[in-house]
Image: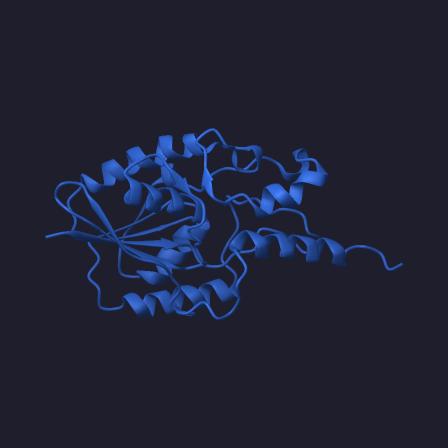
Length: 227
């Protein structure tokens, strides 16, 4: 028998204020659209008995988990927080769009730094021991509500068994990934990036980072004086 892990990304948030300035990722809440997405995920998972529910402890994961699994005690695992970027203001203007939009492109080396902050290797250093500790526990069916970068790292490891970061695993807000774990520690990846509110991803063909970049540009442009 295999154990089942439902690995979610938190629902929609906005990382930029109305003037286009970045919002502290450690504090950002879900948007109204995000709460609706989480309710759709809750409906998709309704009837599934969850033995454990974990999140990173950041408000956006805790809020998502509370909507998706309202009858469960949600555990906070801070080592599963999102990969930490540097300050956007420290990135030269002529490099900002490229580094932002291409942050999760291709097979990313362990020494590469996410927006000049935490490296992919440093991300693996904290999420893989946490994964090992979690899978050593007693449970049959679990839900983990985490982040786009963290989920990519976990999915990549499940597929390859190595510290290889496959950046092209797109993770839509409130998406669900389905993984099974055998007794020998081998993973089977059954489904990736299932968005219950948009199963065929008809709403758009852009990546999450492309949409955040467009949001950043649009909000900053709205503050520019006419003429």
